[in-house]
Image 1 (cartoon, rainbow, N blue to C red):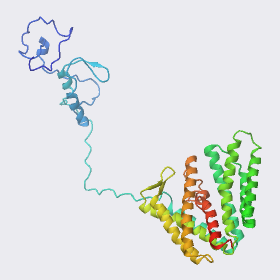
Image 2 (image 1 turned 120 degrees about the vertical axis):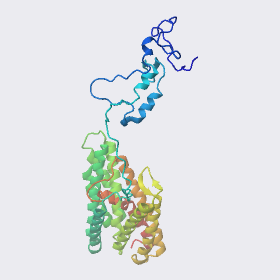
Image 3 (image 1 turned 30 degrees about the horizontal axis):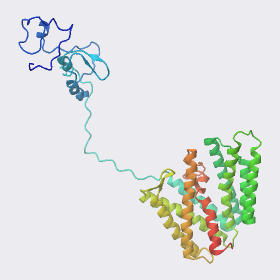
Image 4 (image 1 turned 135 degrees about the vertical axis):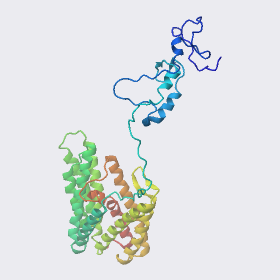
Amino acid sequence: MNDSSWATPPHAGYWGPSDQGPVQGAAPAGPAYDAHDAQHTRPMPIVPDGPAVPRYGDDQDDDRGAARLSGPLFRDQTFQDGTSRHGTFSEHTASAQPHPAAPQTQNPEPMPDSSQPAPAPQKKSAGRDLGAAIGVGVGLGVVIIASLFFVKAAFVGVIAVAVVVGLWELTKRLEERKGIKAPLVPLALGGAAMVVAGYVRGAEGAWVAMALTALAVLVWRMTEPPEGYLKDVTAGVFAAFYVPFLATFVAMMLTAEDGAARVLTFLLLTVVSDTGAYAVGWRFGSHKLAPRISPGKTREGLVGAVTFAMAAGALCMEFLIDDGTWWQGLLLGLAVAASATLGDLGESMIKRDLGIKDMGTLLPGHGGIMDRLDSLLPTAPVVWLLMVLFVGSG
């Protein structure tokens, strides 16, 4: 075989008869050429009429010309797309050469100015309007403190209003996202009555009001078609227990002689626990606590909640609660941090199931009322019970 072994092999019908002699003027060595091919060692590319089209080798596509050089070497070769193409090696390489008169189709991109300063790294974001959240929190605190220390009955009214609004938010989201129609009217009336009964008659009154509210939900739902009855009344009984029944423990704390101090301790410890979790988790948090439920909560934040709540609990039990001691406050703070975190995770689970971020939009920077009650509701019975064990029912 001669040095031009990459040449195209003969195909029947394309080359002339194999017994023909050499043609005058043909190349003395290399692959067989006919008389016409001998005059052109490299065919000129055919430029189509019309607007200029980009060719391989232009500035806008520097790499594709090189890719064409490694293309097929034979006249008849099947490509990956299943098609067959014909042509000599010179025909394939010709299109890779830049045309001398080809206009520049685009200007090269300017090099970035190295003298420009690098962008500053982004700071962590709290994810909410912090100014609005602080303003709303201060406003709620003023209302709570004023009603708590001046007229206890007014504070019971504040609890009842929060319960009714929370029930409205919860039932509305259940209907919007899941098609569950928990009866709001018996829930709102029964919830407000439950809070008042807990304040007037204690735990016994709260349990009786809870039972009557559940019965009212069952009866009220009977006025509608039976489809979905079970899920609607189940959601109604759950809502009655989750919101108003747990809130009655706050009203029951208020009945003691130092009831205002007990309620204030309950509120302070819950807020301090949430604040400690937020502050420490935002600054140092790197290990997720429950990523499938609440991706923003971290183990470092839980440590911050426990530390802050225990310190606040020791101070509150020592200086606010009659006959209280600092070590009782440490245990109380630990219990509050645990219950507040579980309550927050519990509502996060509900919101994830519903596919929402907040239960409502009533409180700017906070969401809805239920987004503020999530850690308070399950903490109320814990604080009430520990207060009774440590210093009595008062």
